[in-house]
Length: 597
Ligand code: SF4
Image (cartoon, rainbow, N blue to C red; front, side, top):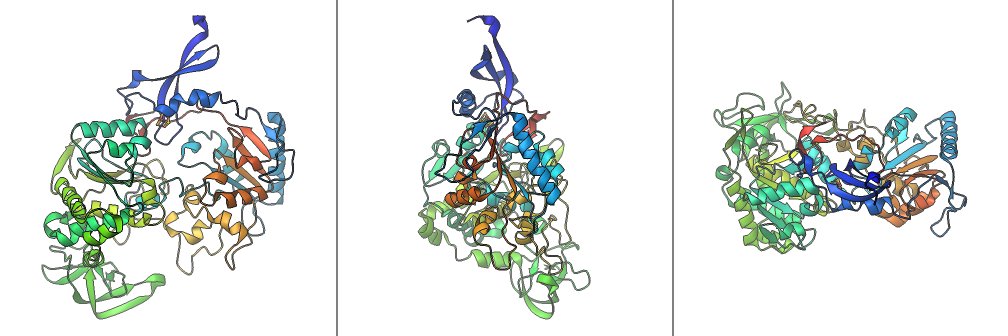
């Protein structure tokens, strides 16, 4: 081989959300022949300059003979699984001409149809990786203005859906991760991180294990993560919520919570001492309308932000005050039986004994107790750590949830139980504990702390979608109706994807009573995603896709969804992309760089 035709090119792999990771490609006569890790940046890169095995597959991916390499148009007007679409190659000019003619007609007719829905729709692949490759496409969509981004591409099937919504509320973060360099004990329910957190995550966990961090892996089968954990606890599939409730019962009901929990954290940073009135809402001060706490020092109920010496955490009391419910329904209690929220928590958790949990999840009761005791033993309640001259609480325990654990049945309960475990020992958003990584639903997107402001009741404020009678969005503005149906989805650029993204597909066939007529978008852009294979009910979604009148699909190969497309536009792989991608800072899961740029 003539050495002059051989060169190396530095580039990135961003094939999954655990990236981007940097690499070097050997190119011979214009053909990529070899992928190498970029060890030259090992001191800066959180994964020691490595790429994972998927990056090495980029050469096969690039030279896959089945790739779509040029724009194509459909010649068979019948869209069906059994029909050959008859794609023929066309020039870029012709492809763009066809698309722009369609769009011009739509804009001339009006961007909103008779049901109040956008005539233009677009769906993207999961995890945010596709958006990194979009280049000017978001600007193009935003220039159109009214675009329905709510047709799901399998959200909930393939992402950590419950955790995202829950995390934004509790951590102000879409994804949470342990403070791996400092954590000493991780309870991992089905989180297969050694297969899925990329080179950076695997490297960080290996380092942590090397210095003695104990990871307990709870999962039905022995994954690679379980195999390198200190302990594997086999469990019946989809019963993790029962297991976690058993651990909670051990801590709250069997141990003396007054001795083993982080009481200052519970009283100052949670609603544990807030008084709950008979209808389940806070007991409020009639003057300020603020939730109240009973101060045992003088036996007086006071607004939560008053000087309170000894907040009541348990018991039942007869007190007066206001209770304000949904739609401002108000009860003026002269003497009502009220309880601190923590008392209600004790009562709620009481039935879920380790014995009860053992029957549900097949983990022996004593093993559940041991996990609870170990978690408490490692939490270092009361300890502090100095970081950059600041003294902060130090709670080196964390709880990880795998994808199927925090999705579907029991997913919400697992997220709740995990967050509660962290609250009990004060390991939420402190060194050593569970931390948020980045933010998606709240804005600004570049700084998750900027929106973490105190609301009127003393908790982190949240831009819920309106539920009041006057302001509720009764007319869905897009087909998944997230503003109408999901208060927690908020209303930012990511909210459509985090809303009920399966509903537009379902409602195409059978909408609820009094629902707007389920129109199809006049044009649907399908970008780096294949919902006809990745949705809950993929065959049904494929049928609905086939009914769409005009589809533009960005295509790597011919697939189950773009089979129904009218225009195919070829996709580039990482080895061909000229996309500028930001590296550094904090990415998803465990991608924490100290540098940024
Ligand atoms: S972990 Fe890094 S190298 Fe591996 S596929 Fe993801 S981005 Fe690429």
